[in-house]
Image (cartoon, rainbow, N blue to C red; front, top):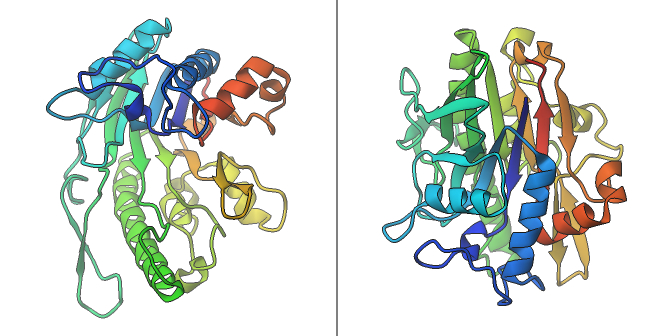
Length: 335
């Protein structure tokens, strides 16, 4: 079974107000790429990915005029994808939904939010962020998607799809404001990861097979402010300091943690116009519980330059570059 996560940059902009695909020559939200080019590239990528389930980060917006699920299903039908069923959890107001596109012949999936002990992700969480004995209220702008999965063979899994808050200091108008906002955003990002980790611990304590996947907007050593807080949000969710039975595993994160000065895997590529070059980062992860690690997992980042097969396949290589500023990450499990 192949499970994947894919952040599709402004997928929402490829549909009109009624949810019809905009397969035309007008510019997409990606610089220098038309809407038909981006849609065609996505069709190539999803076909090559050939996953049984794909967590889509930044899925099309769900609102009064149009709905995420029909749009994704229309997209899948148009390109003949076997991942033709879709679900979302809590809709948000950012035009970037978290959705699961999956093959209904291989598995059943349903939104199954949890609330026991730890608040639901569409609610709020109280935590003392400043260590001043005054708890603050934390919320998710994009509440994680909690999915109960049953495979055709009867295997039960839990999936938690996430799009954790960005730490980028958007809106800062001075160097001082940039530092202040960056620190504030990192505190909020860490708080969301602590909340998520609390849910992870519940599932691990119950013996659930768990996959946590998505865009964390974070990683070990990704910025200079991490030193102020001691660890990254990714390390918190993985449970690096916990006993082995309570840890999640992602080899890409582990590689960075163990060898911080070595060449690191990357899953996203952004152009910096003010500097005239690209910036790469590891932002997308698939974390497995110990029980799933016994099923011969094989992780892969579908990077157009770093993955040999992607690089040697020109059509796929170019499609990956046109489709999004992130690249898919997948894991194969032997069930």
